[in-house]
Length: 237
Ligand code: URA
Image (tube, rainbow, N blue to C red):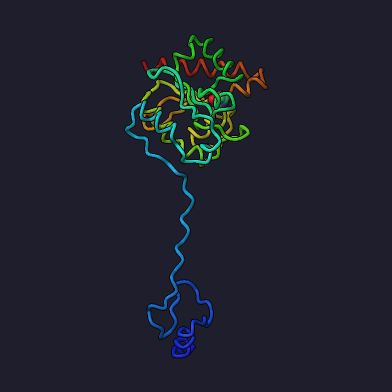
């Protein structure tokens, strides 16, 4: 189009047409360039750098966290409990209703079974450390979403770094898959020793106690996994 005609249209406040963002008309002043629309940034999980925090600062950071939508539905955060010098770190999935009320992991029915399994191994729950992949309860006890687990990952990683456990026991699919960055099912991951993180901490996968409540016949396999974890802890001494 003739630039003079365009100039008249412009002076009258009339659009000639809607040019592409970033386009410049032949002969038109540079100022007429249609501003380019910034490309939408790819969705990224909100994460917090928890490196360097001590236990108290980390727990305070977690309890104030609003990085993912799970914070809106929580009664309280469920940071983790136990001996901060423990050899064994048990990592589950996420708090359920009872854990959300009490602020402590594994206190419901599944937790009672976990306690019994630990006792069979010779450990009271106060002697080990117990945490979850995510620190807030997902609604209707659904699985945590990958971006929710990603938001919480620096907190769990800092817990592992502070604790320096001899072995990690990942209970259930969500914990195992998140910690090992895999989509393989528990049945294929259990029964052997993996390694986790920069410290290459030995990691053993086992069935989630909630699964064992539904399928008690899998308890024998879970017991073998616990013995394997105990051996892996002993091997590091
Ligand atoms: N299931 C988990 O994985 N974690 C809890 O804290 C309770 C139930």
